[in-house]
Structure formats: structure tokens, C-alpha cells
Length: 428
Image (tube, rainbow, N blue to C red; front, side):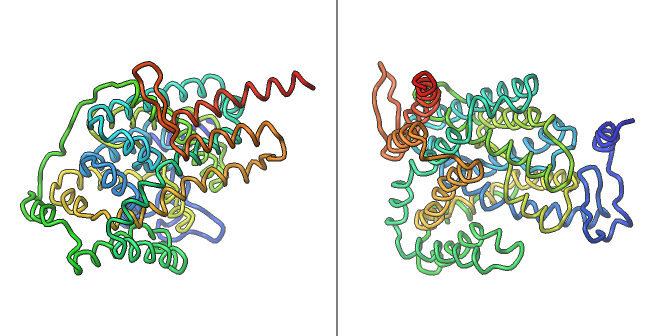
């Protein structure tokens, strides 16, 4: 058997014990098809739950989606991802921040239309996964070069900057406490704590709001009345083209995040994973499609969990099965969902002031890592126009469909860049 066949066999039917199951030798890592002793594996799996909690729960809190339903589809999505990638890529599929902007912008259209948009994004991502699987990962670089990907990611992050500022201004003191806590913990927190800055900041802001009377009385009463055990609320989608068009650019972010995750894990484990990049995209697309069909937020691979793996040197997929099972169990506690729903506007404002900016900076990071040349007039002018359309939220009607800044900015860069590049080549 080849090394890849051995790896796949172990991933499907179990995990080899790494060494004595207790220690990791200097310079070694616990591979995806290995594990430590089960108590240690469960402990590391719980760390992955903690790492994904802040971000995964913040998305439904901001968008108004049911927290327990989001957790349920997050756990199910992780299981599907592990199965479809044949246990070769350790990853947790949590809520994607990229959906916050289009879901918030389309709130007036209702949750069913929003879910239809989530489902549509998932279907498109599945198709992309199939194409990449058949044509190879290099097709992504040809269709969406870094200059395009970075611009779309940036405009998705910065389009909702006014919403973050509005939430901040609603409860400025609570928002400021939340923001300061996030910044301090992120900058000075040791080890894993430093990677949980968003979660810690939200908790600190919530406690401050509770002490100062900043929590909604109605939501606190709902928390008291919520049952400890119950079935997550499921809801079906409806389809409106205007809402779908607003959300479709998120596909580009999900592609960038998934491919980046695959390459990061490959670099850290020393194993080539290019042949499963298409599987990863298809799996995330399927998870997002199911979430949209049942009432959950769209999913993506999580950088927070890469941090846990880098810190522990444990890349075992067994730990992610533990994390997925934990999320599914918590999904059946309405009390837990009601607790998260008590998070006030000020806390959300302090957190989103950072989060929306982080998405925007991710676009800059894509440009920097790819060394995009902005002395090139094609790169410069097309990106400039697309970003202003997105950040300024250019809104125009096409027939009876209203399209906002994210849609126009994304269309501008996706269509304008190849056309301008072709004209530049023709001139030369």
C-alpha cells in the first residue's frame, strides 16, 4: 500500500496511537490519522470547542439566527467534512463571518429569504468543489487571482462598518469595555487565552452590562423560562433573487478560507493535501446547504482551530469528532441558546468593530502574501472602483431587483478585472 492509502485506511477505520499516547517527541506532531490517549484526545477536542465558540456563537447573535440551530448544523457540518475528506484534513466548520454582512443587510426580507441565500451559496460552493476536484486546485488561481480574492474579501468586511458603529453608539460605555477587553486579551493573553480574545471580550462586556443594568429585561426573563433540554428550532428557506445576489460574493471568501486552511494544515503536517482541496470545498458547501435548508448559519473552516493545533502539535481528526459531538449535544439546550441571546447591542458593537475590520484586513493579507503589484494600473483602478462601490454601499435597481454594495463591488472586480487585463494585453 502507498503512504496515502495507509493514511486513508487509518482515517476511515480508526487512529494509530501516537507513541505511548501521552507524550509528543520534540519536533514531532500527532498526524491526522493518529491520536493520543482518549482522555487527552477528549481534552484537546474540548479546547477546539472553546476556540470556535466565540466566533460561531457571535454570528447567530448578530444576525438573529437561533443559536442552538446554528450549533447543531455546525456540528453536523464538521462530521460531514471529516467523512468527505476521508479524515485527512482536521477542521471544525463554524459560522462564517462573511455571512454577517449580507444577512444583516437583508434582515428586512425575513429569515426564510436569508436562509435561501445561505443555501444558494452552499450549492455554488459545492459546484466549485466538484470543478476543483475534476480540474485540479490550480483552476482557482486562474479564475480568481489574489488581486480579485483580496478585494472581494475586503469589501465584504468593510461594507457593514456603519452597522458596527451604530451598535457601538447604542451603548457606548458597554461597547468600549468590550472592545478594550478584546484588545487587551488578544495582545497580552498567554497561549490559548490570547486566541480567545473575542470570546473573553464578549463575556467581560456581558458581565459589565449585567452589573450596570444594560441587559434587556425581556431577554433575561426568556432566559429564566427557557428549558434546559429541547429540540433546536428548524425553519425552511424561500428564494428571492435580490437576497441571493447579495450573498453570492461570500462564495469567494469561503473558497479562500477553505483553500487557505488546506494549505496551512499541509504545511504544518508535512503532507500534500492538494488532491483533497476539492473535497474540502464540496464538504463546506454541503454543510452550508444543509444549514440553509434547516435554519442555521453558513459554515467555514476555522483559523482559531489552526491556532489550537499549532499550540498543541496535535492534528488528530479524533479531536474534531469530539468537538463536533460536543456542539451537537449543546444544540439541544434552549437554556444555552437563550443565554447567548441576552448579549446586548453594546457588546455586539464592540465585538463587530474588530470583527468587520479583521475581515477587511484579511483581504490585505491576501494581497501581501501574493505580492500583488499596485503600481499596475489595471490592479489599481479596478480594485479602487470595486472597493468604493462596496464600502459606500452603492445601491441600484436592476428591473425589480435591488442590488447593494457587496454585489456591485464583487461584480465590478470579477467582471472588470479580466476585461481590463485583456485590454491591457491587447494594447501591448
